[in-house]
Image: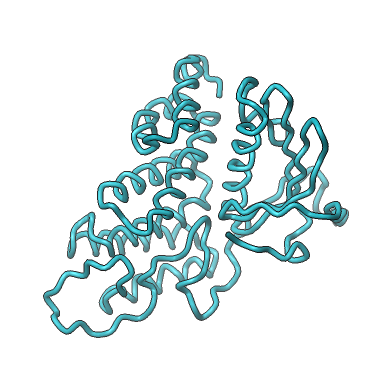
Length: 296
């Protein structure tokens, strides 16, 4: 997991997690888990919500965790790594004349510039596809790549480079569209479950995770997780993170559009598999009738 220099993490936002003895958890007053789950489960649920907030910011974020026996400043990274700090968070600088203190924090237009070794850059919640390094000319031009860590063939490198360029320039929508074009080109050549195609699909999912449309985010993450499961995609950790992100995004969707969240619930449960805690969260929400009454 990540090790972050606290001094490099911006002073804002600071999310406040509150966990009660009854197992209720909320973030900045927004309920995450209803009472009855227990402190440990409530803590985990809240931290996973913070993890996706970090992913949406494209960087670690600051947290103040309040529990019955104390409060702790911490940093949560995009991969879920948690660092408890020995000193309080720094006091944020006062807003300037052009920005009210009530102005919500905006998501960054683009992540920091990519270093030369793009195979290790984290984008949203996961690394870029393993095939980002330049490919060598294949010995057999008719051979179908089957290695999950194999290089991206030369004919497809320009599309990937174009997607990266759009992302660097802050044009996330263009980056997503280009990544989709790359995925379709690979699917047409090799099939939808071939490693290169799955890599492009996963890359598009990580890009989309930073968008503003929870329906689009949840849909794509669910479909990506399904395809990865069907293909037994490697590494398995990517599939696990995709599933967890899908559930976290779906929780946002059920607050924004409960009726559509209900439509996608069955597929979400399908990818969750033996993840009892998250499956129970989905089923309890369905059984509560929340979608009928427009409640999250």
